[in-house]
Picture 1 (cartoon, helix red, strand yellow):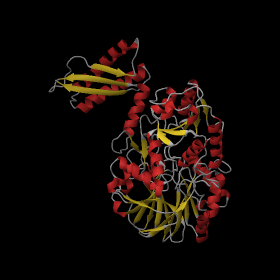
Picture 2: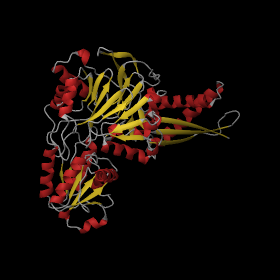
Picture 3: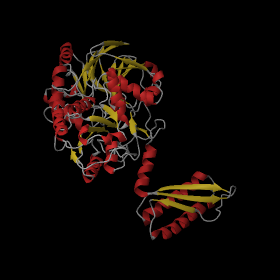
Picture 4: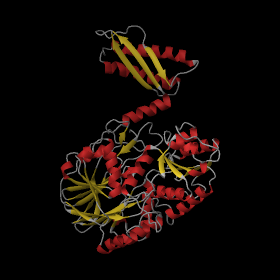
Length: 576
């Protein structure tokens, strides 16, 4: 069976089960329930459909050259007129990053979110010139909005980006709370804490189901506050003798605000490197989420070197070791404007995302070799998660007291850990639902829930370059073959009518044959190809497909026996 990029079996040709009209309440995930990222959750209320988030998932190391993956929404084809709204919890790409691909396919339903979130959604659409077709609506916290048969309200939660929201959905069948990404930070920086009061009120009113973040369910205690990170950054910037270079996520606007304030306190000018950093800071400044004196923030430029080192602070992208991002190029000495000087202090205010550890270590080593003083979260409190630990999750469940719990946002072991927490506070198995992508949960009038026998066929949808969204699995499989065993191209010249060969075929290989064996193996390949081709032709086969299949099979057998390899074989035929 073909494999998904994450290694799990991929149902190659499973039919997509269309969603039908009907009465009642049901919900199902189209992403985010088997991975961190690609978040998309669907709620059906009678004939109406509501989507929560349209996010992307960044590729794993083995997804060679792939840009990202997006939710598979093929089950909604034909039901676009039933989609009443798309609701966005916050502005991170794993929740909004697929909008430019999926909103056109969904026929541009109305979209709702808080102020900063919708600004980031608009930016994604602007890049593809789609904003004019979109219906974007900004809502205030606690404001109730009527959408068909439901009302929705956005409730403030703390995360690692301002304006993050949990969403309360008031349906005729009961209230549903989707937490979005959250933690409970009692001392957040530059924004109010979560709306504990309204969450508790909803609990008093009665909540049918909660769909809750599971990312850090296995970590005991409470997550760190941003205040602790701010104090560490303050000390490092104060004590630095030379320039300070700080790399973090460009969406961590509260962290960026802390850095800017500390830079101002120590009379340092702030220079920005990286397109996403520039874009997000510009959006946040325009909306008032970043407060900066005029002239404090500038783009990196050659004039920066004229300032004393103690007056320079650089904010750059690349905290995850991305090859083309600013920090990696600084470490390699290939950045256009920034070269490491002895005495520079480089601060990585982030944690490596799972799978990025080696890339980050490579950047850190390059910075050390260049003479920088490097500080990371391994030794100091330089980063805190935006996702709650076990106690944060328990507090959410104690506040909301939903009848049913649906752990979301995380790999299977994270959601299982979340389920164990919930069992520990008394939830029975029939009120705890560990869904996977494509599974449907149905509710009856009494408020009981069961998994549907119907399941949506769920496939990986891969975005590769600037092409349209497609399943892309074949492209990924081809790249994996070429990366592990190389490619062999065999060019046949044949007579147009008889299909007889004109001379020997030409053989071109890349990443397969080298050194002293090249001449011998090329000769063997020519003989094997010629023999397989002529034998198939003598059996009466004259179709290109059949002749190519015979040659490919013969070469697979040869390379398996000779080299224990399975290269990609590409036979080509030119008629003369």
